[in-house]
Image 1 (cartoon, rainbow, N blue to C red):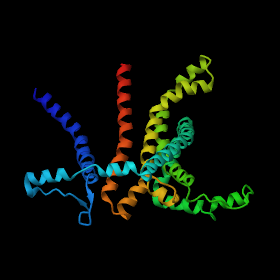
Image 2: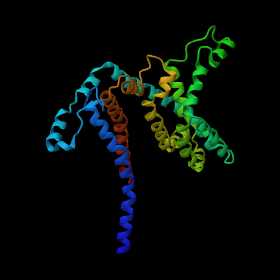
Image 3: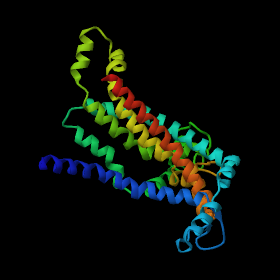
Length: 304
């Protein structure tokens, strides 16, 4: 009995560790940000009010709670600048993720179907960009996409264009930067899913007379779906809140929410509005993930 109790306590401790991690490094910081989002900007230190004073006792707590309000949320929702930033961020992230799927799936499929002795080398080539600083890689694209950069030189030199075009400081440059930067995050989960594919299923489909395209859509694609979803989430979620790529490759009309949040926090010194933007961004990203997890859990229960 003591062994069972000890094993039960051990399992409880193992389960408790991730919950404690989420509590201290997710829930507590989120509650702090949420509290600041309900505050007002002031010229003081800290630059928001009210500030909780525990030395005042229950009266201080009541005054603190009474001073909190949702005016900042109404302001953000009523301002077209912030709404447009959210919508443009979602649009650019979704379009970039779609391109990543179209590029990453063939790469992962080719890696999974390549000779096994080649696969470590191919994996290393996919991971190789991580050996260089992310910031340096994005800076390099500034030189490549500039008006006098490599892309325009090739286009003009080959006669495709008669004069250089503006590629840098556009939404297209931002999409290109996101696709380049996040491609490994799409390829690796897809490769992991496709590498586990049982080739005997494809052979059986061929024996039954299924053409290659039909075997792909009925066998390969459904079995690769977990990797496709994982890669899409790994790319879409950080792309929505991306700041470095829009700031370096985007123009003045590139209104992505990460850039807007940085402007509110560091330029406008409005901690409360920046916190509201952060809370909305978290809701936009977390709610679809929770809904997907619930849908997946229900589908697994139905499958049983």
